[in-house]
Length: 74
Image (cartoon, rainbow, N blue to C red):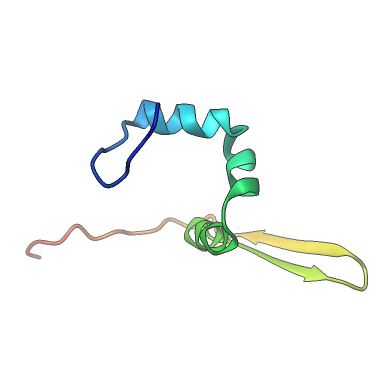
């Protein structure tokens, strides 16, 4: 099924199926544009530093609770 994001809204099931078709979240990240992948990692609280000398990666995850405002009066 073709998806035209200008005129349609995907359901959660459609999004889940599309991600599974690409090999799950890992597969989706592997085929995504670097800018989008970087934004995903940032939004998820993930950071990584590559050391070319040791050819290793140090990764960290911010597992803290994020508070989101929904607007309205206080």
